Image 1: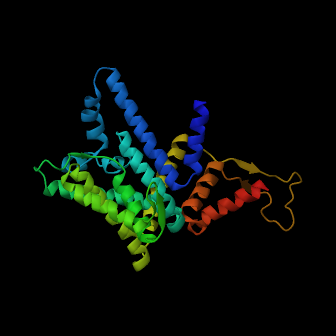
Image 2 (image 1 turned 90 degrees about the horizontal axis):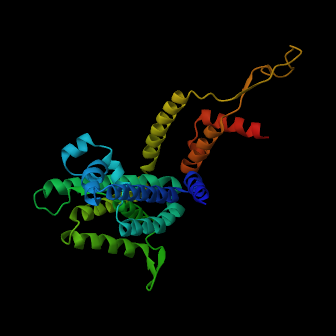
Image 3 (image 1 turned 45 degrees about the vertical axis):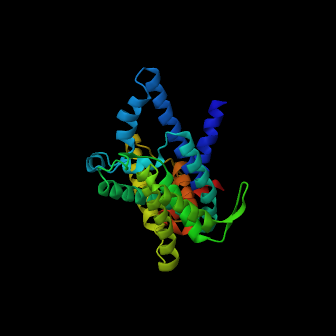
Length: 312
């Protein structure tokens, strides 16, 4: 049963939309972090030891310049990291509700960009608040959670379709602009109530969500295009390294004319016919799902055509 569940999750992550993938990634990290904490508890180190010596310094964001300089990966890991159940529950619910709306109205290929850019904007505002208010004791040394990225998704959806209504339990239909306004006001009002650095990060993410849609509609600048291009280059770089390390070679099918004569009307009948590797075809199909058919390069179009011809 466990193996079938894992296979279902892997299938959802591989072929699901971006919202589904983000939720799976956050939940997987949450489970891994809590299992690690449980191990430290069972060996007698205690949960506090795990938080103080492992989770916070190595995976959470911080406004201290030494932490940023020597642990730059934490700028990204923090936005997928939760340790408290209620924290991840509400973040994933809001990501699911507003992510679906944003996906339907703004396109699946923009959601990951908005999420990450929102997380980065939240980090920047958190760092600025930490520097300016250092010594006051109200800005936590470490930050974690998807809240900034989720707030970016919420504000992007509300800016894109402010009159769209959601049915809230015990309340009824409420337009997105009012939901977003209440969430932003709550962060502003709760700045002095604790988790000040977190609320500043939420506001930074909210600003990025609004700014993304503003640039898209008012200026014609789609910030997801350079972002997705950069992600494609990064994944392509690591894919090439993986291929070189494993020394994989794509299978080749060779046809040779037994008579030794060249077929009429086809000057290349005795040349190699290369059948594309299935993993390469899957990557191209994923790219189409993320960025559309027009984003394919001439080489990728040729690969897709060869795969289609071979399948006939």
